[in-house]
Length: 452
View 1 (cartoon, helix red, strand yellow):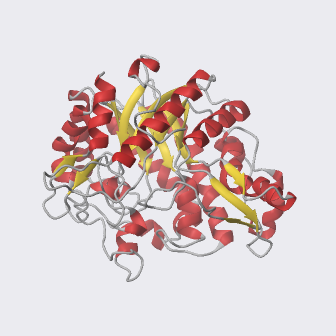
View 2: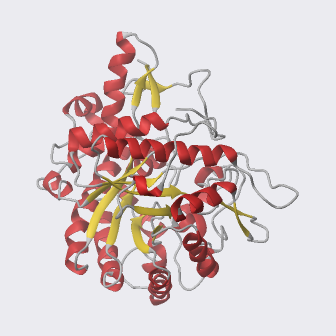
């Protein structure tokens, strides 16, 4: 696909189905701030950020975008884009400060106001129950490595859906369980900062099982609920034409993609990956896999880039490594830019798993934005990224993929986890000193596209 803005294919909102969801996405810890206000408990990210050396710029989400106090302005921004949907997450420690037990009324009242604010603006609310902010009290008891945390999650899901389910119909149980398990419990770059393969695999299993166990609760509490899960998925490409690298693709796909897609669609964990894991494989109890395979109404896909892998016999049981090839277009984060990869990924999911609907629940890019003398941010690269990936989404639809929505990541510049405030994904610029919001050129394009 071309990167020349004058040669891009024409793109119109009318190229997509009339009922297509158009929105933007956010996450509680990345934007809310107010981490010690109105009864909110400590999360694993509060503790992780307080540990020296964990966050690149030494920052935290304690203030972030101050969305807790500025949410009406932020919803107005989403409305100004012409969006008809808004994806957000609920902070578990704001609802159950100790993870379970006593409910914090003020936390529920905040999300009451937020959801009512969306509905008043014609924005369809899409809630994510877990976007990585586990209450620290649960982590102190073992966190996601302990089976008891599944029960705590189901209790939390019950409390939230009972309160909001009369107005909020679209529910995502988990955002990117791969990141929670592997970045948080194998690589240790995310909270809680554990580095152990066996723990990471057990966390994977408990996350998926908590998803399956929560679904019936969501449906019981929410008339007409649409419920699913969001996965971070990647097309896997061999670094060379060698047989060794081709075999590495299969192994890497097993741990990166199939480890989640297979059990969610009733196939159990992939046998080839289980064999490689050996003693690190998770403990599975009778009935677990049937619960994980509970039917969903949609699959959320977060797409950012393909992974290029090579054989690496010395790199753990999967024996692969992700490599960076020269002369590949990249974002400021170093991630490859591949709209074509989105088409490949969506076609593969549709062909191999046939979920009833697929929603792109995150897609976006970080570049080194410059605020001009006139205060404008002309983020040409991010605008092109959006256009090219929407052209790819249109192509996936043309090829028969049941694509139902697109949520740009992210509405606002925000706290980018281990990167702190060094990376800006927003289509709206945030001055973290003054909290001033300024739509970038990418936001102006998105609004023009959605209102055309």
